[in-house]
Length: 232
Image (cartoon, rainbow, N blue to C red; front, side, top):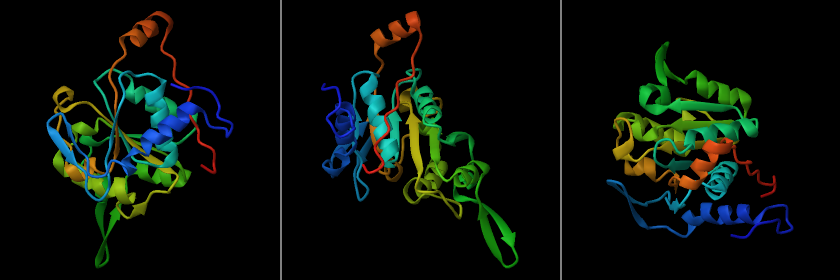
């Protein structure tokens, strides 16, 4: 892998990750089997970027996707640090970060709670969505998304694609990211529906045993987040 600055303020690692995160533009129509689900890309293209270890490269790709506003789904076995890394990114970049475990929420928390007003109904958003709108920017993190039942997955479709929670529109500066364990390793896991899977860029990582041993000996360090130039 190349390292260092290429002269335009962006490191070679960031360029490589940007290329990977843009791979969905050239992988249209790819049929990718993931666990027991086969994701056949349709209108909103899905790609799977595979990394062989949880090193700085997958974290760089994660940061670039978030910075570029591409909805991201991070696959990996339990305990490899997905949630820790995403929350760490939010803290390091001082973004308003809302962690939502979709499986413990009813569909109405995403489609909006219907409330009668006169002869019509309003669909009220949950508090976490209101906080993101008030902050005007932030990070919406759907953790353990592979434990969400089909009804909740259906309610998430509009949130991820159109950025609406009930009748509330999330600001463009709010990035959406999710984390999931393989279905056979999740607590009560469900296959993702094709429409929901196709709304995400998929990144898959596996554990790096040498990094784990080093972390146990000297402590686990949060990788430095990658921030793209404003004009990128």
